[in-house]
Image (cartoon, rainbow, N blue to C red; front, side, top):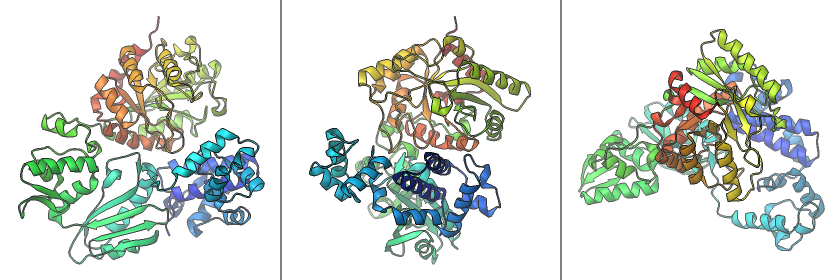
Length: 577
């Protein structure tokens, strides 16, 4: 069975969890967690790298021992060390770790003090009031656990877009190898670039008699075939992702692609428009009575009801029909439109690559400029820069820029916004920079009023350019902090600063709806990778997808401007005396 990066990352995460439950060396545990993070975010397939004979130790944070374990997992499907620890720690304990806020130390207490091995046992103990008696718990924690446990039934498991991409791209390539197959395309929420997807919908066009369905259900990663027919099949992969495939004739391809791309609200509205014209739209085509009048292309389907083609990312019934009828559909930003990246780190703090390596990687991707924005001193865990180290890095940037490296490095900092809204470095340091990226990295639980006022005060600072990952959320891991985002957006307009669309797959922050609010307020966004390695620059595509869902056009993206247009915009935010 093919092994994907996400599979190896999941094994390393599980191993780290088991080791932590056992009380192993914290440095050893951290190494596995860091490796899992590296693999999960890696745009390159490590199995393919091994097949080409590439050295995995060149990857960030991967030493010889980890590289050997990666090879073992790719070749055998598991790691002997993981299997050994599975024998000593009940497998069901790992399920307890999926509850937000329950780490390995608390799981260890639950197991040793109450004998709890499963989620059901934990729920019963919480209902009986036994959890609150344990050290490190209490009434509030018990009620919190009970709330999450009672809400877990019926929850649909969703997968982050970037993780789904690993499985989707591999499966699409596999199906395209089937004789007679003409097209294989992903539809559904995946095509709409939603930040998480519930399942994967694939459409296939093929010559008559193609064995593509037999090939589909024979895919090596299949765990269970749920249904199989001549034109429809559904299965569950070993990673638990459900995949549905439809084989459609060429004359219905556009109608099926439109229908299965969704969203439901968009499709209902489109069918209602068709009905008013005496037409019927379904996955087979557009019909006038029994006569098909369109359906081979998506453009023909929309044209049949008097509309231009609507980009998939806009199909949420959030104003796209009115805009289409009025000729006001946006010219959405594309990856190729980006001229630079305004948020990146090097190994001077918590990045994995040198300044020179980051510059070369950005240049090789066709970027014109790259802003180096290390963490500031407050983030001690990330080796944040103090005044002296910042000045040393600025001198290094000057030296590199003087050597004609084929890209311009901009001087920046990702400065912490402190609890009172002040910035983590003195003005004398900030005044030396081309841009200042402000970020909240602490005190996430402030009240809505305090959190909002904190951010507004930071934005009012004389040296403030971009608000990084504005809501602070980590998808499926940490909820956004409570902030009045419309007020923040209005203030950004008044202040003349910008908002980030952070492209890291775990962030995708701003949210799509807030991107729309920024657009309506006239606030430009910056689509940044927040790269901590050269490979992370590849995540820009996910930030672009998020911006497209927020109706963002090229002209509304700060880093879609060439350098000579960008510099004056940055200078306006740096209100030097």
